[in-house]
Length: 145
Picture 1 (tube, helix red, strand yellow):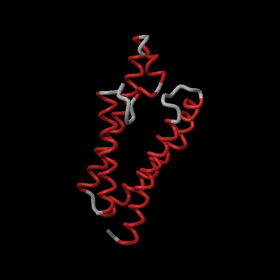
Picture 2 (cartoon, helix red, strand yellow):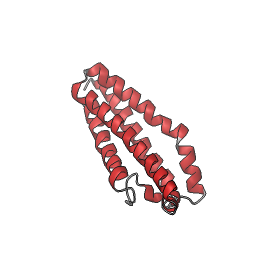
Picture 3 (tube, helix red, strand yellow):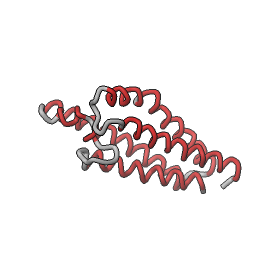
């Protein structure tokens, strides 16, 4: 049960981020593109804007795959599948800190992100997801809930 709750919380958050990316990339909250100066600059050239839009939708599509897989696991999976799904999710979220965090931190330091310090807030949110799943995993293993 605790694994299901963690999955549903994550799915709700990621679903909102995915919808922002699809329909409101200029939105000022969530995982919007408006924090990146390059997003605004891409609008000056049609080719760059189309490429940037393509990449945003690529990420949104990847989020959709992740969301639907986790929902399938939560709705149809047995305890072993849910446990494995949570472990894999912790790992896949953790990859952010190796592959993407160094890039967004550098963009932040270069002043390419507004508001300044966004990379820190984003890493705290992503770290929070890892903490949520890790806590759920520990509680599940200890309490069998």
